Length: 330
Ligand SMILES: *[C@@H]1O[C@H](CO)[C@@H](O)[C@H](O)[C@H]1NC(C)=O
View 1 (spheres, rainbow, N blue to C red):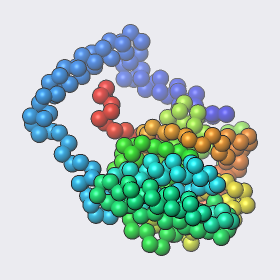
View 2: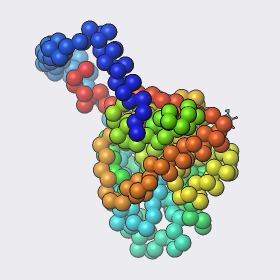
View 3: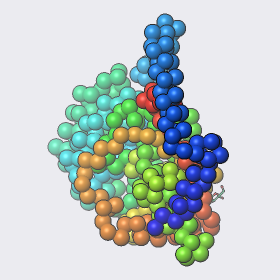
View 4: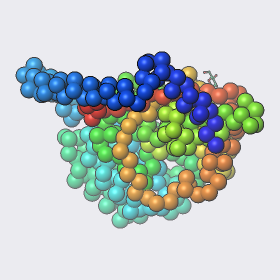
């Protein structure tokens, strides 16, 4: 299924050879050497870093109080109130969060008890000196496109799009937000995916590459909107500028709104997204991705969107952003 991966591997091995890392023995020696050097540096830098004023004074809560330094959560949810409560309870404690918008597409309006529960959580958790706002965005039609509708009174430029059944620690969200601030036109997220050329069907046919293919090759061209930052201008582009046929396809197939957003942003920027390392906790057990035939349907979406866009806007990359404080070995 993972075409091209063996070629990638061969290339990697070739590169290592070029770098002179040809035998396991020499790799081990180099690793040992690096360990020694790093340990020495750490011992030296420990006391020196505070002495020389290298400690991190910029506490994230006092760094920026303006809205440019904040983001809004847009959370997609569907009839799983316990997950919704759990997610909101968690994210409301994250610094630099400005507001939470719950995308509501159920035929019944949110119940009084759900509303008051969530309002209570949000109000009692206004830590970090900032009152987080909570809003329900009620939709009449049940469509996956709802999650990308424009939000009229959105104060921040940054949107953190998230599903109700995945939880990332605030430190991971903070890291992704910082990366987004450095590249605000780019989509920045935690869940990478790839489109591969399907050579068995000719070079204009593509297949969807799930997590395993990304893990194996380190290459990706999309990050999924179940957990990603992007600029709010893309909500307008998605809803008002993107061909309506794409949105209709998504509504009727109940799938692939995230792939369409990746196409849209790649088409606008000509650049790849950025994958950020983050700890993921999946609190719901069943999503559409655990249903059978999932990847065939995703493959169909990719090929459909390639036709709609008239080209493949997606750009592959192998860059991954990590918190350098958590990688001591480099
Ligand atoms: C892709 O980008 C081009 C150039 O910016 C634009 O003209 C076109 O409308 C975009 N296509 C879609 C489907 O959004």
